[in-house]
Image (cartoon, rainbow, N blue to C red; front, side):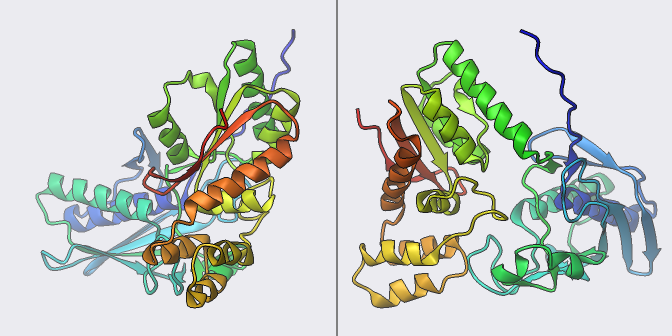
Amino acid sequence: MTVPKTTELRRGWTTGACATGAAKAAFQALVSGDFPDPVEITLPRGGTTSFCLASHILSDGSATAAIIKDAGDDPDVTHGALVSATVRLLEAGRGIVFKAGPGVGTVTRPGLPIPPGEPAINPVPRQMITQAITQVAATANAHSDAEVTISIENGEELARKTLNGRLGIVGGLSVLGTTGIVRPFSCAAWIASIHRGIDVARATGLTHVVGATGSTSENAVRAHYDLDDAAYLDMGDFAGGLLKYLREHPVQRLTMSGGFAKFTKLAQGALDLHSARSQVDFEFLATLIEGLSDSSDLVTRCLNANTAKEVLDLATEAGVDISTPLARKTKDAIRNILRDAPIDVEVLIVDRNGRVTGEAGFDA
């Protein structure tokens, strides 16, 4: 069989990676007097990459460096944006303090990984910047206490094209990224790769496959089962692409693993779990809570929540296990999509730390 040649899409770099490079360059200029150009950073999952500086300024008490974001072939709203970091040294013991500059939003509502009042710089970019500054400080025999202000040129305007306003992030964009790398988004190519993965699993005699929404949920399954690598299908947000193909090309057992928010949407019947193409129905979650708790206040608070994570947090604080019933609802939705396909289904709800918080097991 002749396999058609495909053009590989070019990967890019997250806003968080660009902000890390800019912050490292600015901090190094403060302690040494010189900007590294290019500046090299370490990626969260290993490996390094380097960025050329688009501009840099060293003034009395502060340094600013900027990098133009390259998102590769991904249709990222921030592709080509100028991401800059201004760094000022602080007294020893203050730690690293993050500030939102022009174009970077501020969190105003609960339910996000960053609490209200903080700049919308997500946890992994904060860790990357902290690690980069700490490494430079150790090499220069200096302390790492610093104020880091991240800015994104035209970020407030670009944010109007995102869901930030709905999530309560005001004034600009979020600084995102968990790996530092932007992998190009191509629906057709990704779904085709899922189909090919199923074909390979069936052809090699595998009877148990896994559809996970990301690396954290995949690793949770790996902790449960000793399966061949070919059993792990890179499903991402394309639950429909996976399930509809399995309906026609079944395997004996399917484990679906994902976070609370994405599997809420799957339980609602969504086939594409990306935030731009499906939304959490808070009435659905409030109704689920209503069947688990006598507290009308809890139901109301869940109905008015900002994010699915906020609903989960509210339920957890009230001692209500919402993840297990959600897993059952998700399994029901999956069975509806699979119709009469002879596939035994298991669902795992996984939190951000990789812990399974709810599950609906195999029937046999």
